[in-house]
Image (cartoon, rainbow, N blue to C red; front, side, top):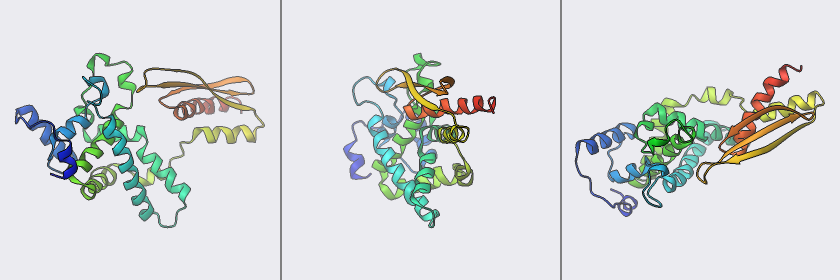
Length: 245
């Protein structure tokens, strides 16, 4: 067990059937035997299930985000030696964005381990980013438990290689806002993006964006960030624009 893992050791492993099942599942997900099982319990605990401040995965999420970004950046740097910084940044963003990480969490079975307030089932919680957040927190748990080298191997061998279709990711053109702005310029249209509403708690903030073209509402969209809301609105506005062409 690494020194960093020992710092987080607060509880002893009870050895119950449920504990053994959880430990076995984590081993299958990561390819590594957990040294400090409580790190992984914390990584899979959403803030809605926390009994006290910091008894959830948000701090691990912060750390995992940084580690994941660094590992993917190095991977792409070596994978595409002749590509420019803008290309590398865009592809990294597509791999580590919340939607893609949520998909990964569901693919590898991590989502089934997330502890959350089930009373919110079907409400805001299921639309939240808890799956992607747990994915980042799991990365941090592996790092603290086993160190950077093994964590890097986990990211690349258990997540990127088997579950990330790089060719498909590279070919994606998901910047709906840029596409819409380009269409507006080509057709001499005046376009504006506005955030018209926002609601929710501090850890769950949902934004509503509105796109107007020549003063007419062309699309609205919701997202957990202003950027995502604008992208969702732009996607709908693009559909609208085809009816005007």
